[in-house]
Image (cartoon, rainbow, N blue to C red; front, side, top):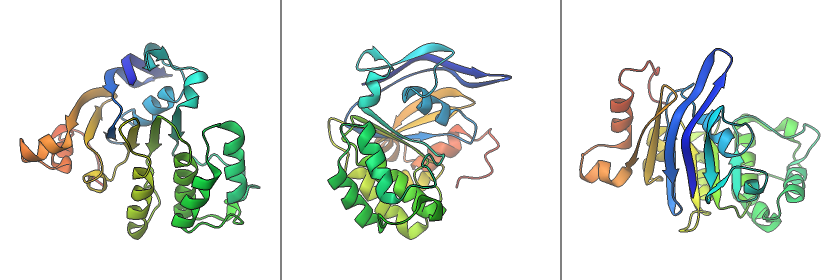
Length: 236
């Protein structure tokens, strides 16, 4: 469904993504794992059509990423991207104007589950509430591919299960979910595939169940193995 072919992205003085080739299939929930600065966010932004590769190509359903592919790919960035004057309700209307697949009914349902009131001003939201809002408005779309960059950032431990349940509501055989996170243990029971990005390069896709049953390793164990020679500051 989503294919990366020798994709490289260079900025001044830095190669953020270095020749990544991989393929993501429908019906799977992928974790994209790697230390800060490994290239995860840059790759996601290219797949979302927000920036262009320096070389190589990302293709969706065999077609190059373009304005048209944005209709099927829902991307949640780490950065806040709403205007301060907006209310939570305005954010939903904003998305409904841009995306035909946006469901206001689903948005309302997710807001209720997240305990977010429509009258709240975006500028008044805590980091945790903003994180919940970003998840709610992204998952209210009926997209084919969902890419969530650090969706658990700023959310307290008690709220994480609720957020992950909201994300999993949209998982089915015809959709692809890609979740980037430093919280490796939090994804262990949720994802079935794990993509490792090391030093801006592709370092493998692993089946999480096979790691457990065949290699007797947890996802965190595999993370430590892959990045044992990288200064990570500890797994968060």
